[in-house]
Amino acid sequence: MVYFRLGRNWIDRIHLALTLVGLPYSICGSGVRTSQTVRPITSSCCNLCIPSVWTMHSSAAPHAKSRCPQYPGSDIKRFPVPDDKVDWSQNWPEYDPVSYTAPSVLKMPAWADPDTDSFSPQFNTVDGAVDRTSFEGSYKVEKGKPLNPRGRTGLTGQGLLGRWGPNHAADPIVTRWKVDAKGAKIHHSDSKQPVLQFVSIKRKDCGEWAIPGGMVDPGEQVSLTLQREFSEEALNSLSATPSERAELYERITQLFKSPGFLVYKGYVDDPRNTDNAWMETVAVNFHDESGNSVSELPLQAGDDAGQVQWVDVDSAFPLYASHSHFLELVSKERKAHW
Image 1 (cartoon, one colour):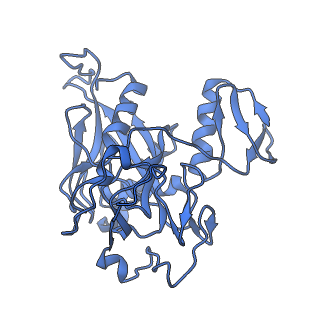
Image 2 (tube, one colour; image 1 turned 45 degrees about the vertical axis):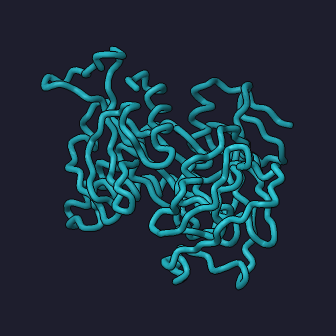
Image 3 (cartoon, one colour; image 1 turned 90 degrees about the vertical axis):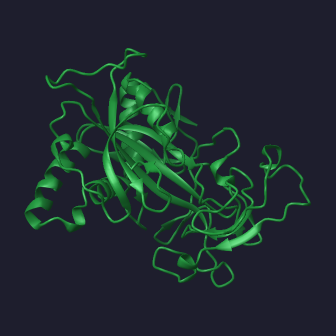
């Protein structure tokens, strides 16, 4: 076991940097910890050791949205799964989940796997350009199909998800302070804390408000996904003119090069999850402290968004999947109202 004793600020910076470039690592109370052989990466200013394997196990309440009675975008009803039967360790001979893979996935677009009967993916590893590792650690594979690490969902197959096993996404949480006409921070009347605002999109598929994230393309670094998804979903960069796109790129690059706060990395309680396919994400907060970066850009919904706007961060505002939890973590980090 190798330990590196570092200050909290350095730990946070290394934590975020390794995540965004897709390198594995682990954080413990005394610093960066590795449990495998490490190799040094040398630069002119410092030496860092990057571990070859990183795992993280999460303990949480049974997923709920992943067991929603009706599967989204369909008439399919899930097999009801009570809280005490979610964990795979619970013996349940009567469990008879519905099998469903959406027609859009069965058409085998570039972002989707075929059925496991016709190919043999390499689970718990990087399979060619597709990362099939999970932030939850090593997951079980039964009869050639991966098992959701958080337990039963009442439905097997891929559902609406393209990949068997983990489907990796990235969620850029772009925030600013809510200010008055004079530029002073506005404080909430109850909590007396300053109010944050974040860029939110209204999803076309379900009508819920959400963080403008998206899927990580095969072989793509998470840092690029975060910037690409925000530009496409919240600023509609794909339809911008070359001159408009250049301005967007300059502003967005400025913000996304600033120190970000790694909000969350792991399993997402998503209504699209199944017993064999599930969502995982890396959520990073980029904060426009001065309000002169993306705050000045006109928001425009992309193809996957019905609407886009700055929304006050508040616990009473319902959001898609686990996004409310992400915003709660951001509020605590920024010492803002929740």
